[in-house]
Length: 76
Image (cartoon, rainbow, N blue to C red; front, side, top):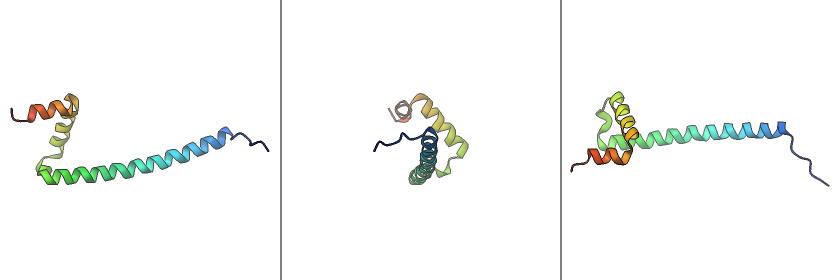
C-alpha cells in the first residue's frame, strides 16, 4: 500500500507545535543562562555595579569585541 503524502495543513500544524516547543526550550535555557551569569557576578563582586552601568559596559564590550575589550582592560 502506498503512503499518502502529508498535507500542507498537517505539516503546518506540526511546524507550529515544534516552534512552540523550541520557544519553551529557549525560554528555559535563557533563564538557566541568566542564573549562571548571576553566579559569576556574585563571585567577582560585580553585584555592586549599577545595572545601567553594567548594561553599558557589556554593550560597549560587545561593540569592540570581547577580546579587544579584555586587552584594553588588562594591565600592560
